[in-house]
Length: 516
Image (cartoon, rainbow, N blue to C red; front, top):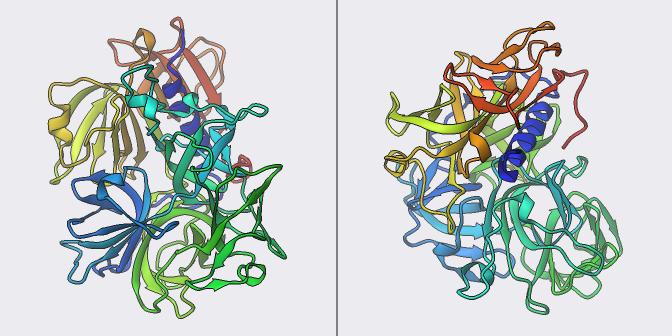
């Protein structure tokens, strides 16, 4: 019997990302430089929790904040926000690091349209000509009417396995994707943080595409593999309506919307605008979270934004690093001069995935932190951990503020994504409650602790013994994907019925995957 699809997706997508992330070289540090005391006028990143709104580790008071849809300019309700949305928060007058207050929260999904390709093996989907990479941290929400209907209800889509791709003239699932723009030179244009499933209503549903322009010809733009026809569109650049034929250039980030789905790779837009990436005020302090998509010398790109890292005293990040940058807007209004950088997820960091029953939760040594135990291994959970209960819809309030009380008396099956610090401690970047797999299977992903020479039958991954059938030669650093039964001795036994062990070669600078 096999693990459920959700767990398989978590394992394989996570492993793909882990192997890929170690390409490119770096020192593996999780460091920060510069002053973190400055108060940003704008903080852009993913919503990780509610109470008010948590973005980039700050809890913003949203009592008087306006939620603005950048595509329409309309004001929305704060309860329309969801964990996983990438937003830009403008700080109110009087806001401080100790007590952040939001005046405006800008929302702008990157694509809205049909799922044309659903690649469950590669962990990606294609929407509006954009390749969207899904990760173990991608949240799913289902807003279709049938989910809550009293007659003929449907099951909420909670993962990639529930999405349907376009087949002939039958369109795939209609989705809205929030996330980070990635480099146009890579195989993925978007790294998804939230995929929302919607009902499609002909003539009423709006299609949307936002990304970096790679080609311009008269009134046609190219973003990803999609051609955007602007011949009948209203185009804006920093406010006023301008001729579409001269409105945009290669490298611009443009958002285009329309009422009809693309045909033959061409999207006929009704409206287009330069995307609002930064305040157009030189000297403004901003904070931006995202994945690094390209690096040139001391300059790197996050979500289409150029960052000047020449003033940093730590190594420049590499492609794939997830970072938070604090800095000031340069005189050109489009570049951030970085004063501080924090590595949320370093591409070269050692990663571990644990999947099994939660056996204990205890307060950490620092306020607002907790120590959890899964498969006999302890991990630290704090305000930077992405926390979610994937077994309940609608998603309940579950974050660091109610973490211990929410888990009181429960022993759920969880998937922990963690990085290993220099002392060997696990720091959870993700904590997901998921449905338990059949036959009480558990799983672990990570590098082998030491060489195992045939006919050895046990390998350890972060101290967890993994039992396998003899005959494999495993080298230290090989990535191990193991699922099996958890023994009384604290080992994962992959030799049981339904168990499996996959060994991936050690990935280094000479043997990088050709990934995003």
